[in-house]
Image 1 (tube, helix red, strand yellow):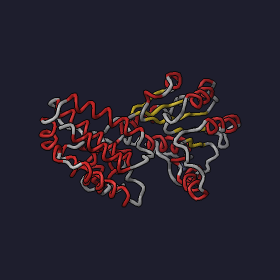
Image 2: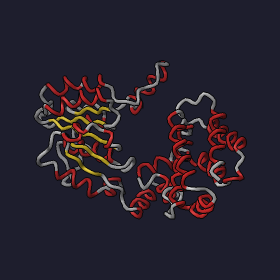
Image 3: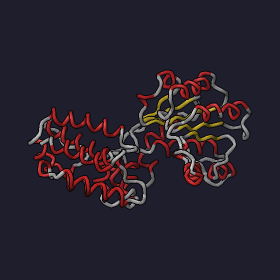
Image 4: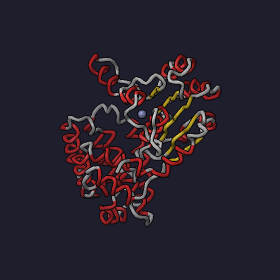
Length: 341
Ligand SMILES: [Zn+2]
């Protein structure tokens, strides 16, 4: 079972645009539902010389081969340098500064030549831009120029998990295709087919998004998560100094780079969001298996305290990329957490 079977209806809606291709399509939906795969497969199907009835590329023609090798002359992928493995690695080796998390204005301006020559294959020319929210205002305005003066046979495919952050002028130039959350049953079955163990748990932690769930399960998060939950469940009995030491040790022992202070704060945000839900008599969203514990903890706190703690976490997250003193930041966090109870 692949992501397209899971997103069959969104795929069909994309296929519906094939006959009369718009100049710009915007795929929106929660992070980790498979938008990028859908967009990429849609592009492949459009460029392919012999696509199947279902709209998928054949995978064998010369167009498919070029695309697979990353050098189809009528296709451009525009994404932040940090997302492109080769560039990120090259930068790391040469010791250059960290690759950008943003799509730069130069990347968008660099499309000019591509857009102003005829297509090489007499077919459609495609720009896949992902994630569209990774553009600052200047970059977005540069893109807008291209969207406002559409070239014939050109399709802009934009993908966004945070469409509300896009300039309204960009959104209004695009036809929107929504990629929904699949049903939990279908998503769990999909995760099982991907050989993800404990799929239901990861799915809940990913807010129901199957691709994100698979990513989390495969990212070595379990060690951090189990250590963190072991501490959070203690509530008022938590020892902030010991908890900070334990989490610091877990983060520092990680060689994969997946376990970071930012991740830690994100897990705390989810835990805290569940506390707030349960305090209001609603079921937890992320830590469904820990519902009973969360219920007891919420009962010895208050909604106001939890909301204030949530606000504090937002502040911590903003500073979590480069904490000056990891241990101190963790201690501060855990003291604030214990004060909830
Ligand atoms: Zn093909």
